[in-house]
Figure (tube, rainbow over the protein chains, first blue to last red):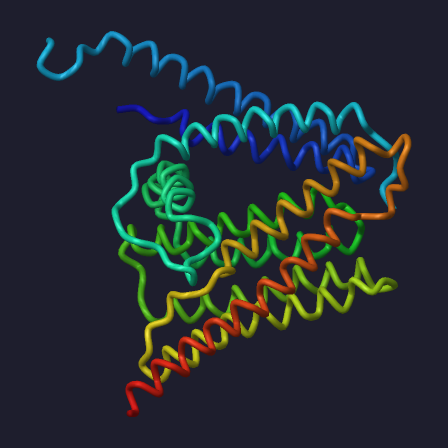
Length: 66
Length: 252
């Protein structure tokens, strides 16, 4: 089973938090936006893959019913 | 001091964190536990939460093993991130410091897992990991102490640092005397969580309330440091009592 979403979502979340941290606390605003962008793309990809996996799993018949 | 007050950004961050916590709680609730009773000396973070976090990290662990990343690289990364967390605390970048502390804790979990899965675990790795952990903890506490240098909280930071080292030292000494030591309410993961959550929550609260409250109060972080100092001291005492009782029974 492809579980790539389980890698991308936490990684994206971490990148987002570092981005928010840089934006909130420091003067490195360019770097902050870079992290926020990377985090959004990564977490977004993870959520997309999760939705795709759930859609695929929804059509798998339960054991003994197939 | 932080450059500006940013309640809007803090609100967006709070929303993202809220969604992540909701998803995490769902995951924790669905986690299946291996059986086994817990007692009063069990760690504060329950077995369910630990099992869930390990499961959350397992795909990343598999990926790192697949890429032939050595566990030592993760150990040294943890040390670097802890130093960065210390620098962030020192500079007053509290929200960032909190998340860096949590990242350091995550790397600490990952290095052991990668070593076991990659077949590179052994006494040398265990020694390097333990030494790096102590330096990493000191780096973070040093930064925190520098941040609170003009406040009474510095005393609590010193006590938290000493307590944390005593927790590890008591275990090492007891294990050196042939005694297994798994008891203790506040072990390393708990310390990372208390300090990390205290940090990012303090940063968030101070930005959300900056338009009507003084940002220099740092009430949440202060509370986290005081709680950590008290619980680390308590855990060191719990371990010392456990070790003394068992060694006494073995001798008698």
